Image 1 (cartoon, rainbow, N blue to C red):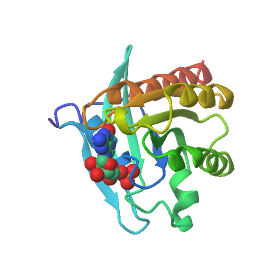
Image 2 (cartoon, helix red, strand yellow):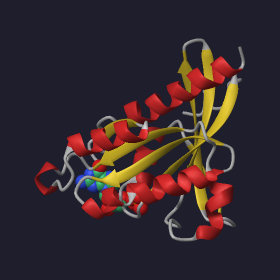
Image 3 (cartoon, rainbow, N blue to C red):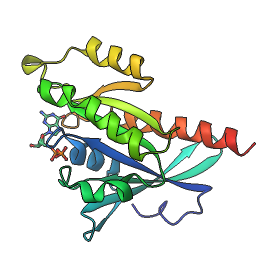
Length: 182
Ligand code: GDP
């Protein structure tokens, strides 16, 4: 642990986790973190964030990922939460349809406060709970396609597709950022 943290990185970017309460955002973040993450918080605005260094091709990228720390309902954090973010994981819970229905509301907020070219991955979490599923994988895929988002079903509990969901976002951001700097 730690070794890679202080390594010189080529660039740093910020990404955010959004979605209803209890869909699994903080569990996804801690899965992705393993021992490499350094958790930190800004109690004043009620968010937590974590860093991780990721190598994409030749570049070492430091991703700073923000989590709402249970403050989803407090609108006061909204603009500072989204400010400067290049990516978002928009998470719903496949066992609670209401959290999927609210994706539209989160997208609306994201488009109001976020960068217009933000990379968004729609994440259907808790795929291990297939027996209580209320949202089919195809519905998630269709919505993502219609909205121009990437899509992935994950299980933070079983550590399935978690790395992949973050890496899709990170490599897309890398793609966009490197095109811009050409
Ligand atoms: P947040 O409020 O969105 O940050 O959600 P949390 O990460 O705190 O998770 C809410 C609840 O869902 C907790 O009881 C977690 O243990 C549970 N949970 C999170 N991810 C999964 C998952 O992939 N599968 C299952 N079965 N439970 C999960």
